[in-house]
Image (tube, rainbow, N blue to C red; front, side, top):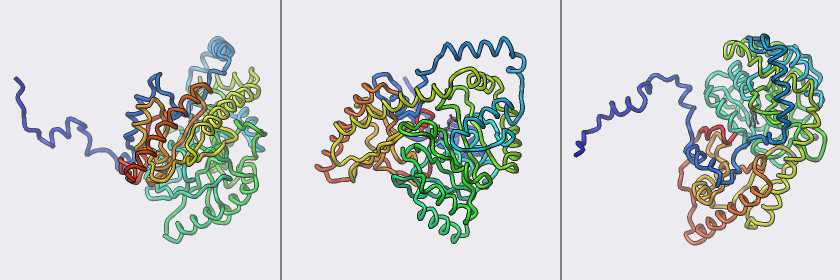
Length: 441
Ligand code: PMP
């Protein structure tokens, strides 16, 4: 026999989380999204995940990497396994300047700060610049991992319109003026100029000087996040914003997509005064970025044809992009729209009016396909009719199968909508960014 006891609400709350009243206000911005649980299901092998942004490291020569790591332990083990400099290993910082030279950046290794992936660089920059209530300008949509950082520092994100050529200059100018007119402080513009996550678009060469001129005139610092810049399919890398504005731009780079994310090595290139603050912030966060990882990446760059490897990655991703675009063209209803990216990992797809991508996700997962709903990429609840599809990880055959399943789900949703004539939204969205988990980054 079970005895039912009345529930004491105070007690049940404390059983759930005894510290609920003690967390800092900034944790209010750290919330797990309701789609996180769905992604646990989506990671089952029978589901085609078009959700995750995981680099396809199957193309890496694991024997070469393994050899470099065992050499590292044998020849430099005591240094590699020791604490290191808060700014990062000097030799690696030198090599990073060579990587950035491919995008027209002339920099000194002294101005590079190594970070734990570029994700930590976004965090450190926000930590040194932003107080609660400060405004950060972001593209609409923007990278979910950066929105999570901005929210955790209690910043207000103001989205700026993009089109097929990237950030729209007039919208940027109007946005800056409107924020200033409201008496608010803009700390920086966060932008992903190449092969945008999630929008898949690239800021055109014509617009780059215009965007820089507006930011210069309005006194807005630019945070240029560029993990995909070397992964273009059809042409050489574009000139970085930082290449033409060394004092007004903080540039972030990463080895996650051009080598492997497991090393967690990224970097920031910043004007000297900012760089000093970043090193102090890095020391307080981690003492130093991981010495072992940095030396492993450095050995890989020194002893392997890393540019040849990037070429192979470009081919691999191009093949998958082609598979996704041809499957979309062959299988999707005509009212569905998407862009054709010329690099990177992502396609941004927009559904016909009335179809809600977040509400539809459980039905897609039941049909064994997953994507990230567009709302994850906005701080203000927009994006419900869009979704991000990643083609980086599955094989071309699985991509086609995933698109076939998704097309079936969308058709069923359109049928439902035309029968009942209602918006298919079930989940009401509040403003804010919630973290769908690392699967979606
Ligand atoms: N910025 C963007 C735009 C990204 O897409 C990602 C990863 N998906 C990151 C930063 C973080 O990458 P990492 O920390 O692995 O360098």
